[in-house]
Length: 303
Image 1 (cartoon, rainbow, N blue to C red):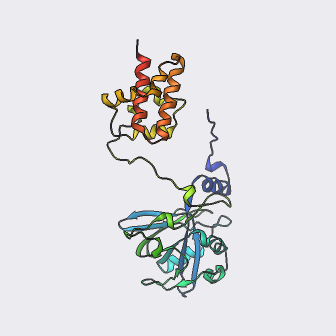
Image 2: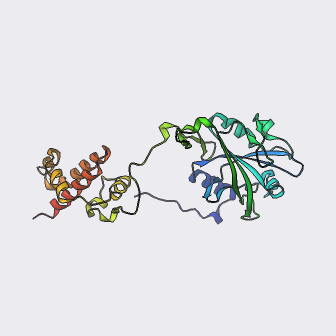
Image 3: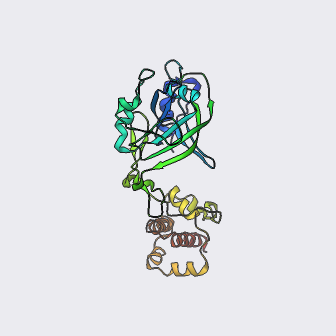
């Protein structure tokens, strides 16, 4: 049985908790937030405490946390408190090292566009500039700022409402839809680790989720407690829209691979049935796999 270590945030340092959180809650998308202060001085900073939280209205949220050393606030937060506008730029692999450079705690007034070698592009509606190298940029107005505390490491949720969205045209399909597989995005992990969203790290779920699924509780008892079938296997089976009917079970029963299982010693049959069902799952035939599992259950209860 898997053993767990229980961690109480109140009994470890803020630094330790920060490291645990960033390692566990990953991968996280990265944005570059472009802001200005009242003197029109530009700041550019990356954030992985970032995501989309609403499509109507379109709201992005990022969080400039207080510095872990002394609890002071960062230049980005100072800026959006003064000028409630921000460009949220998406980071991809071609700009990841420049992004990392822009994260340095430069003195107030230093322009990270220049420090990191990014190209500023005038926004159409708001004052902060966009990052020309970014595959996607969002011109936003700050809806509100929600402080989460005054302690070192405390977050400040910046709710940014999208006014305009800019997308590199080569990322669009013929249907004018943004293809996320073309962006080559990077994501933040724990420590110095990052993740790159390329073909080898992407997959599609074979099941379409809706309200008609039979659910795992409808599977035979032995299947739900199988030492062979994984949680993913059970999830696929539970996503089917109907239990196998008599015709399906009869056609499955006629399979030579199934017939061979009935010749095995009783004590070995259940595991063999489960392994055969898993084989059909791997080849994309969950309906036959489920029929096999019900046949196994019926065989167990047969006199």
